[in-house]
Image (cartoon, rainbow, N blue to C red; front, side, top):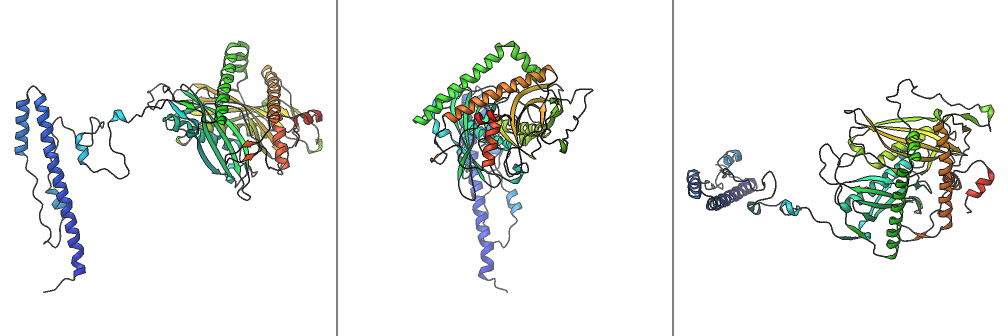
Length: 546
C-alpha cells in the first residue's frame, strides 16, 4: 500500500472543492430561476381571462419537470469527469411567452431576473433602453468642449523636404475638430466647410505637432470648431504657431435611413465662460454671417453662378477624344532667365481615388481631412509641371464647402489646373467629383483654390520660368478671378500685419505668431501668402517689415 504525499493530494482536493462549490451555485441559481418563473407565470395567469387553465398547465409543467439533483460529494473521489457531471445538471427552460433573463423582447429592455445574474466588472448596470438616451443639456461651457491631440511628423509625411505637407496637417486638423464635434454632439458629425487656412510656418520632420480644437458656437444643427496648431521642436523644446482653422460641422442622427440622408439633430448651446471666450463666441457669429452672405450672393447673382459652373474642371474619365496626359513641359538650360509662354491646359492634373473604410467615419462618409489631402496632392501635381525649384510647399488653402458627400465604395475624381503664376508661387484650382459605381452618374462635391510655392533644398523661393497665356474664355475668367483673389489675400495679409500682437499659446504663455523659423522659410511663406509678383515695388509693398 502506497501513501500519497500531502503535496500531491492537495491539488486534486482543492480542485474538487472548487468544482463542488461552483455546482452548488449553479443549482442555487436554477432553483431561484424556477421560483421566479413560477411567480411570473402565476402573475400572468391572474391577469389573463383563462387564468385557471394557464395556472393549471404551469403547475403540471412544474410537477413533470424533474427537480435539480442534489450535488454529489466529491471529496472522496480521486478523479472527476467534469463533462459527465455537467450533463446531470438540469436548468429550467423558459416556457412559451417567457423571456430568457438578460434578453428583452428582441434583445431590448432587461427583465427582473437580470438582478440575479452576476455583472461583469467595469460594466455599468443594465438599464431600460428608454433611459439610455441622455438628453442634451441646455447650455454647455465652452471650456469643456476642448479636444487636444499630438502627432509626430514622420518622413512619410513630407515630400522629400523635411517639412510636413499641408494636406497632412489639414487631415489632423479635421480629425481633432471632428472628435471635438462628435463628443459635443454625442453622435456622428460631418465636415460641411473649412475656412481659408494660411500656413504661417511649416512643421518639420521629427517635431511634435500639437492640435487643439474647441467648439466656438452652435447654430441649431451646425457648429463652428476652432483649431490651433503649434509645433514643438524636439531638440530645443521651442514652440511656435503654425496655423489656425475654422471648420463647420453638421450633427446627424445615429440612425441613417436606408437610401436617404441622415436627418439633422438639435445641438445644445455653447456658453462662454470668460472674456476671451466671449470674443471667440462673437467672432464665430460674424464668420457665420459672412459665410451665409457669400452663399446668398452666389445664389442671387446668376452671372456668377453661370461662370462658376463653367469654371469647374471636369474629369477626363468619361470624356472621349481627349489625351490621357498633356505634353511634357521642358526648359532650355540656355534660355535661363526667360519666361516660356504656355497654355493653362498643359498644367492639368488628374487624381482618382476609391473611398476605403479607413477614409470614412462611423457612418461611411469620407473624412473632410482626407479629401483635403487628396486635393493638395492634385495641386502639387499641377504645380510641379511649372515649378522647377525641386520642392513644393502649401502656403494657403482657400475656403472649401463640401456640397455633396462621398461614401465608402465611391470613386473620387480630383481635377487640378494652374490658374495664375505670381513670381515663385502659383494658384491651383481644384474641382472635386464623386461617382457611385452602381449608379454610374458623377456628382459635383466642391471646388478649392490652393497657393503653392516653389522652393529649393534650402527652403528659399525659386522663380518660376513659365507664364500662362489663356486661350479660352474660361481660362481668361479664371485668370481674372485669380488676380481678384490675390488682392483679397493681400488685404487679409495687411489685416494680419496691422493687428499683429502677442497671443496666448496653448501652454498659456505669450508668444508671437511668427516666432522662430529660418529666413528662407519666412521669405517663402510671406511671398506665397501675398502672391508677390516679380515686380520689385510690389514685393516691397507686400513683404512685412521684420
